[in-house]
Image (cartoon, rainbow, N blue to C red):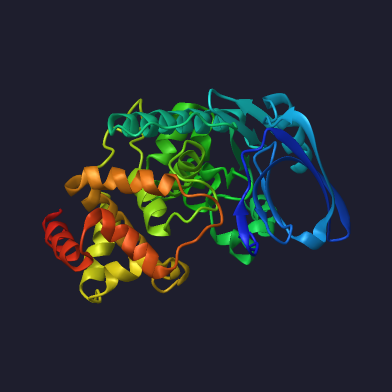
Length: 375
């Protein structure tokens, strides 16, 4: 669910004090403590609560606002666990790893398997960008993942944010809550025949390394990549980071090698499914395809175009990282500094891109020549 935009935005000064805001929403009074990231001239706020959740508050919702001299600080893990467990259905437990808090009502074995997978992704992601000379921030909040044992329970819980689409989406990262939510992949219909192997981590790996499970696992890793990127300084939540760019990074990392102890031996390798889709799209690709990809995010929201659009986002990311790495990092640094709720219009987006990479038409010709050779 996207934040309702606040009019006449102005960035708030870096807050030393904690803000305490009482709002009335849907008949309830809600008390929030956190830091104000953006304050509108009409009194609307974007507040980041101590659990990392972003709240877009309209002026007529705000009942009371106070500040104190206590500096903002995130909840500690014990406080976070108590809060989130109180929001989830009964029966959930929590597993702590170095970077993650995993809330689950599935087996402890599966939760530990996911924790190990996410930690390997976190290591691979951090190592990749460090080698590219992009210094990542240390995540301020623990990375929260919620894992349901049952797909139906997951869909009912996720409906608040995803609506009717919840039943067809196996997992997602929420920009609003800063949490990733999913269900136990080993319980999917196509893999139930292997249920007797679910009792050990090795058995889970064997199940999810099967060809019919690879796209499912890739989707979860895709969402986990978004979560890391938005918590380690690559993107800021609700900033004007073009969707082609954030999705391009996620599809660049999305397919793990489950046979590897590190999980990602081939970061930067060709993403075969995305390449196949891009070659298919190329047969009818319009001349302005690159421009429409960059100037706004509309193609990602059109179900008829989404597969082609994700494929082109991967292809462009792959091309730029391979052929224009210095420019790509310069563009990444520029985007990473963008603040929440300040959006460029389509012309500005294209201008920002061309300032770094040069003329769009010339680059497009180079892009197509390069991708024709990729196999």
